[in-house]
Amino acid sequence: MRSRLERELHIKDREFIERVLTYFIREEVQKAGFQKVVVGISGGVDSALTAFLSVKALGKENVIGLSMPYKTSSRSSVEDARLVAEKLEIEFHEIDITPQIDAYYKLFPDADNVRRGNKMARERMSILYDFAHWKKALVIGTSNKSELLIGYSTRWGDGAHDINPIGDLYKTQVWEMAEFVGVPERIVKKKPSADLWPGQTDEGEIGLSYRTLDQILVGYVDLRLRREELIRAGFDQKTVDRVLKMVRNSQYKRKMPIVCKIAQRTVDKDFLYLRDWGL
Amino acid sequence: MKVAVAQFKSVLGDFEKNLQKTIEFSEEARRKGAKVCVFPELNLTGYNVWDITFEVAVQLNSPKLSPLIEMSREIDLIVGLVEESPEHIFYNSALYISNGKIKHVHRKVYLPTYGMFDEGRFFGQGDRVEAFDSALGRSSILICEDLWHMSTVYLSFIQGTEYLFALSASPGRGYREKGMFGNAEVWMNMGEFYGRMTGSYFIYANRVGCEDGFVFSGKSFIASPYGELVAEASPFEEELLIADVKEELVRSARANLPLLRDERPEMVIKNLRRALNEE
Image (tube, rainbow over all chains, first blue to last red; front, side, top):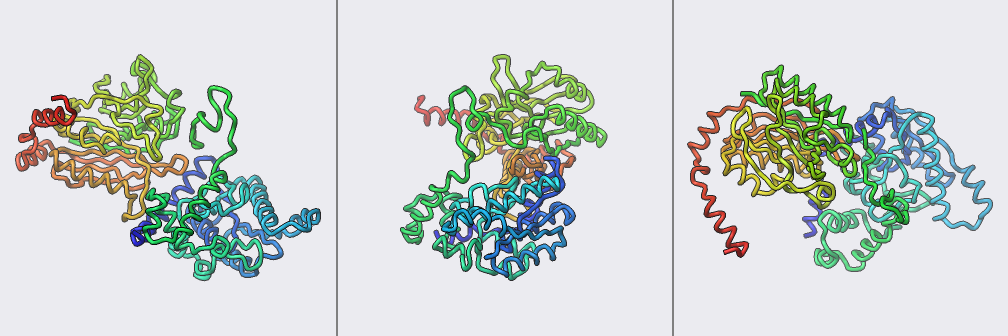
């Protein structure tokens, strides 16, 4: 079963999937009346892949990259963000978010890392949307399927954007695609990190490797396997339970706010139209 | 005789724009000498209509259809739309329009209501699979999910269908094939298989474009009564696919493989009755 799960994650024709993702970007951006996108480039592989796909879809003149480091962001993150922008020859802005974050936390000097990290993610979102308005662009998201499913994101922070080309790619598939589209090797190979505090790594924080996580997720989500079947596939019970719990507990992050129904038709419930209505 | 398949991109919920483009494709098909021009499922409305169903529905005597009725004096058309019956039931229907008249209506019999599909929520179920005479010869129209049920293909076969029109709006999924989505490959296998097993032409018209991240899988095709692809469209682009269909090839295939001659519908009925405990 476990090798079946590994196979399930394998993208056979990466060129075709690249065509799908770039087609999606072009269609959804242009149908909505836009030419440009802004993308937050962190130096990590998700945003690098997104930026590469955006340039392939829209041309380098239509992609604006933003690097938004905080004073504790690692130097390599900042350098790798620059590398992506240089490689793609896109308009690029580096905006230090330290002043506004520090100004706020002067009021709460004891605030923990998670509070500060969330605030940074939302500050970056706020800047991306400011640029989007200024440059007449859409904000393109960089959340992969693994993090969407376990809720490894900040609500209304990195989780907020207009379209997301990589949200149906698990992290291990992001690596495959990133390598294929030409993301520099050192970015593909480095340890994934949200870089919200020094030394943070995703796998350290989540507590298991992306390979294992993705196999459990693809089994549970794509193949609809049950908990017992996943355990029988050779994953340890505690790990399976933890992953399933993360999925369940983060459902709120994947939904819009819920409305209390009192009338015949209610916006979030039975007022059913795609966003592409009329497009 | 020539048949044209219009691989079509719809504007979701904009009947007028889709109608306009349907006329343009029909004119091109006529110029190129086709006798029939086939459009995909719900091409006049877009696929994920949901609550737009009740806004884009047309009754068959509606003046909105006049441009198609007029066009049909020059070339026969198969189009997809939301049909509103006199009793105000809404169907996912396809019309065969010829020489100024709607000659045949197929109401989708199997409405997928699972996973990403929600048709049963909005549409009424058709209950007839009926062969009719098109400009090409004895024909049947089936819509998307209809064809995933062997029963509909059998019913069209047993009525002597030589030209099976398969209309779909199939959202792409599956990344384990080459050069196309997994579902597009299944459609091709189906066309080749059913073409051969029924000794008929299998004429498959699919959508392209994107609705809220559903990327339609294109790859419209025409398969011969020997189960060979005689024409094949791209995965993403709108295009008009034209192929020659030959009655003599249907004859040849059925002479070599007399499955229709040897078919025993009475035996099938008897066994169905038994299986349903009606005997």
